[in-house]
Amino acid sequence: MTSPAITPAANATTHLPLIIQGGMGVSVSDWRLARAVSERGHLGVVSGTGIDTVLVRRLQDGDADGHLRRAIAHFPIRELADEILAQYFLPGGRAPGQPYQLLPMYRQVVSRKREAVTILAAFVEVWLAREGHDHPVGINLLTKVQRPNIAALYGAMLAGVGYVLMGAGIPREIPAVLAALAEHNPASLRYDVLGLPADTDEWITLDPGAFWTKALPAPLPRPKFLAIVSSNSLATMLARKTSGIDGLVVEGPTAGGHNAPPRGPMQLNDRGEPIYGSRDAVDLAKVRELGLPFWIAGGTGAVGALQLARSQGATGIQVGTLFAFCEESGLLADYKQSVLASAVRGEVEVYTDPLASPTGYPFKVVRWSGAPASGGRERLCDMGYLRIAYQMPDGRIGLRCAAEPVDAFVAKGGAIEDTTGRRCLCNALMANVGLAQLRDNNALEPPLLTSGDDLRTIGACLAGRTHYSVADVLSYLLSGSA
Image 1 (cartoon, rainbow, N blue to C red):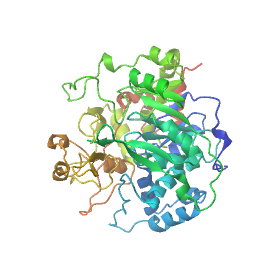
Image 2: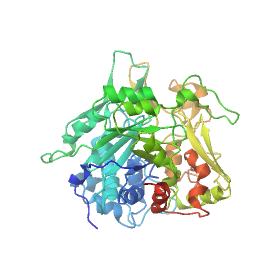
Image 3: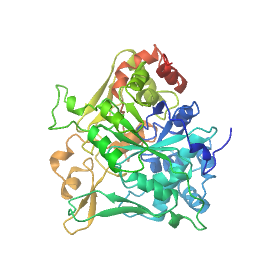
Image 4: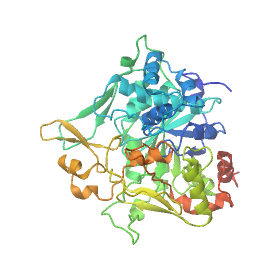
């Protein structure tokens, strides 16, 4: 097995992937899953959401197999890596009853070391996903989780990431960021701040040169950029008004995680879910006319989906749910087995919750027999990835989250009705992958699993099994291919 160089020529790919593995959740699409997909010639994708917290919690759990430290040894800015290891690595792991040490929450401006943790974390995840093969690997980030994104992109590029995929917002500034980072130049994103005057802009900026104590290295390969879209208008705007878009992932409302809200006034069905109609369907013929490669996502985890997508002009498909529950994914093994056993019995459902996410976007939640109890959690916000920036009366920029304590949210100018039903996704998604925080009462943060609608019909792929591999998923999706 060979280890990846920092700036590999292998990422200059000429063949576009037929199947893209979805960049799911916090560490569900971890390096093991992405590597297993990519080494088979498709596009494995690591999740960059919360990757800084994932790294420091894995280090505090002792890095028993040594994978993290092996990757960190290849990080090109040695003194930063040593400083982060000294603070967070615990040989043998945490003591019984010891909670995880938290990272400082992101603000508009944070310390060099705080940014460095994110750079290192993205580097480690991509480096491990690339280890041992010469196929490209991608990273998925959420546009709306603005603050860590530039640092995560730089770390991923230092590790030779081949593709960047971003949705959950309008990622029109990302191609320019990638171009700047490839030259180790400062990169900026416009910071979304509620209440900011129309003629005023705030910025998030990262200067790669600030992290190097020696001469800057050679320019990095610029990864391909795929924008994730859910409407023709967004696809058209990005394709025609943003240079540097290399392709589109067209995602429908059956995909897992956050969904774009329905167009028009919010209407709910008798289960309390948002109703999507013809206005929410993407016209693939119009997408094809844009002249960019595109992949179809949402509801594609079935035999024949790839062939159908190709017949509609797509390059291929993006699949999440089938990969999320396979052996190589980062989802906690007990949850995978419990959900799949319920799926075999027909006792699993996917509920599109209009309230759970503090972002206000609909969020898909898995309900199954045997799910752990999640009631009674005290509201708090100690990770802060989904906090919204707003301008305070004195002109300063504050941050609030609809899932934080109600009194605190209202004191920051939030509407009390916006707190109803909100869940702390940051802590819940960490719990999904075995990184749950330990609270004062010795209780672990509860999980909140998400999945696409394909989970309802996953039995066709399972064929009675309660575990399966990446190879099984790819064989299933490719069955019947020419």
